Image (cartoon, rainbow, N blue to C red; front, side, top):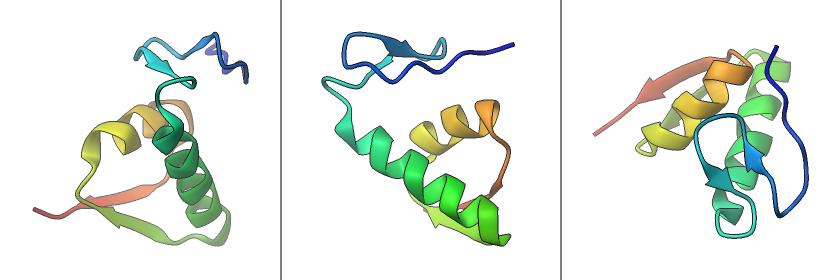
Length: 65
């Protein structure tokens, strides 16, 4: 089981995202979980954050280049 701890001094999962320095991943998590809740697909150029989020909570993702 994976753990996500909401604390600015704790890493999220094993992907080394630190909330203190990676505020954008928090926004990406909100986008991903919102899309998941309504069955939408996230379309992004920022694959790194979204793949990390997807490993914890699956959702539909399309990467564009």
